[in-house]
Every structure is written in structure tokens, then in C-alpha cells.
Length: 324
Image 1 (cartoon, rainbow, N blue to C red):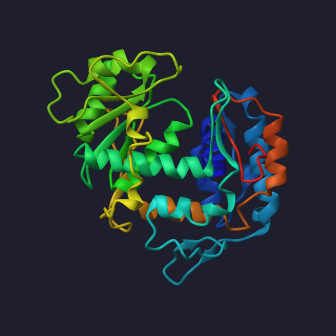
Image 2 (cartoon, rainbow, N blue to C red):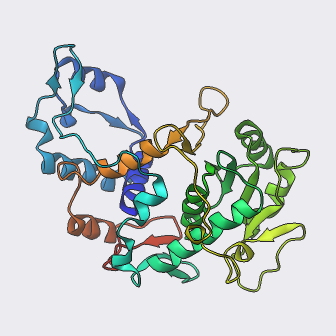
């Protein structure tokens, strides 16, 4: 999952515009022609994105493959279907076989040096899930995540999944008014943010009768005081909290139909709009990137990313502790 998010986000960010004429050309010729795609925008930042396109193209010989067209004139990929994702909730998919890497580093904050092993990540996620339920968040409720790229992001998201809670993801650079609009539209019942963002988030929830909990705050420094009228994230994941799977509680979510993520569009042509992603949507995507025709080798990715600088503060590690 880490590799998927890391690569996809950076490719999307750097390929700003793919001209419509080239897409139409590719469709009209009934084949995918990567070389015919015209890319415009900030060309000086495209080096890594161009490498990705070239590498994936070479891996799957996509330039020499024709799309499969069935009797109903529907274009289908020549890449094989994936299977095995049905019936899995997001956290079940993530934690499957995780005991193989219990003591390996999963996430590390490159700024503070704080790290989590896979064992710690799963344990803390389970505790956070339990705390959500104990604080009256029920299956189907929504929690707003207003965080930068910190390791605790994963704990919050996977904990929400286990508790049966949907996560609406909010840009931490938003103004109070922008956050307020998304909180109201998504009907979020709780908010989690960093201590540095607390004043803006506190302003955004004024007059909001749907939010049932004080703001959950993740401290960026160990000696930072917890803001008044807030909940310290550590109190929800501390030693006195039992892991969700040991409580006898059930997630009570249907992976086929129930929403796990509620991201919002940027609002380019109007107000931002929410997009419901089910557990099935996300888990199926995770299975898709494991297909050999569309997955670059770990070594090639590691070499390329080691030459690239990124703006986020979190390094993601694979079970072998190699940066990916």
C-alpha cells in the first residue's frame, strides 16, 4: 500500500495535464499509444514521472499491445483480472500476513526520527479503533482527518477502518472556512489534527452540532502542551486501552457497499464534491498493483526514488527496510 500511494500521488501531481486530443487519438486507433500523449505544464518537474511512464511501458510492452474489444464493443485491458479481494475490509487486507514482519520498521518520520514497527502500527491502530467506539463513534459515522504526511496518519486511517468508521480526508493547508464546509458536508462526528493546526480546526467547528468529541490532537513535539478542551491522541492509544480485536466488538461493515474514504475534489469547476470509496474499491486497487504487468520491480523503484527528493516528512519502508 505504501508503494502505491507514494508512486501514484507523485505521478499524478507531476503530470498536470494530458491533452484531450491525444486521448481521443489513442481511443480512435483502438490501442494505447503512450508516445502520442502530449504532456503540458511544469516540464522541469517531469523527470521522475517520465521515467515511470517509460518503465511501466517497457515492463508490460504496452506499446505493442492492442486492447481487447468484446462483442459489445467494450474496450477491456489485456492485463489479467485480479481476484481474491472480495469480502476484505481495508484493515484486514493490510494486516494479512503482517506477522512476517513484526519487528521490521514500517513508518518513520524523517523530521523527528519517530518510527513504528509493523507490530506497533497494528497494535496502536487497534487501540485507536477501540477508543473511537468507547467515545460513541458508531459504524457508519465519519471522522475528519486533517493531517500532514505523518506516520500517525496510518494509525488513524486503519483504526477507523477497524472501528467501522469512514474517514474524510481534509487538506491541512485549508483555511478554517474551507475545513468548516467539508466538515458540514461530510457530517463528520469527530476531527483529528496536529497541535500546530489546532487553532484553525477549532475555529472551523464553532457552531457545529454534529461533532460529538473534542478535537483529537497529535502532538508534534514531546514537550508540547495539549490544547485546552482537546483529546490527546496518546490517551486514545495508551497502555490502558485494549486492542479492538480483543474486545469482542465487530466492525459491522460490508466491504462491498460501505464507504471507507470520503475524499473531496479540489473544486476547480465549483464547490468541492465528496467521492465515496468503498472498502472493495480500495482493496481491489491494492490487488491490481500487485499484477506483474503493471508493477515495476522493487529494485528499480528503489534506485529511482533514491535519486529523487520529496517534500513530505515521512519515509515509507518495505519489510526489508529499504526506502520505497
